[in-house]
Figure (cartoon, rainbow, N blue to C red):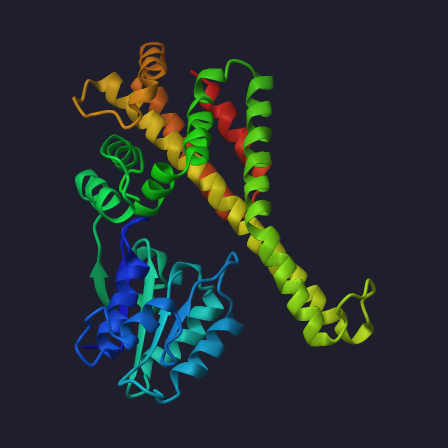
Length: 351
């Protein structure tokens, strides 16, 4: 047992779920039975000695980390440990990492940190070196398909389809299996490469993708934003007022800024899903071009994939995969979403 753990694994591998299960096992008097009130409260995020951190913003700043460090210094109220689970440790800023480092170097006696990130390289090296690593692997298609059938009651053909196209991401597989809208959006995304015959088509497709991502993010945040505004206005005693009193202006402006950051992150998450689907598409094109014998991920688009494979070269396909990776980096570096997507689709249209 140690005071700091780093859970790493690809998207969908269950990093945060593993961390929460470990936290429940440490607090549970029976070592993690999964049925007692302690286990249920940890899993539900209501245990007084387990803090679950999942940011809705683009990053976790130094002020948030300092607040966590103060919580880490407290003695546990009911259980044997004070546990802090950071689901997006790769989003901790440099200044935030400096604040966290002090707590990791001189931990409180009964405090345990659990950090989650896609890879160990995504975490600052000084933090990484003070954690014990727990590496998770991508679940197999068969395992995901069985889970969808057993847990969610999905019929076998749909479960097998979702497991194949989700590429190891359980959450994505569940969404595709249970939502016809998610399946329709996937078809729209993967229909784009066959349409990129002109500059106008590239620009129109890029605009459509960004507008769809913006609309999806807005749909997700609409109720959350309204509820947060209502709570804050009630707290400030200005419920129903259309003006911003001077004493409340700073708090309202801060909430508005936080909501904008959340919307931006959700939009980027939607666009990242587009990039993942396009990566799988051009991966299939490359498999056809090289006669690798590997099964296609996107069997439903076999005709388009075969046509593109015959009219292009493996070198050109690799350049397109590099362009997708470059677009992901640009979005992470705060390049305007529309500009990044236009640049990508123009690159994908080239032979």
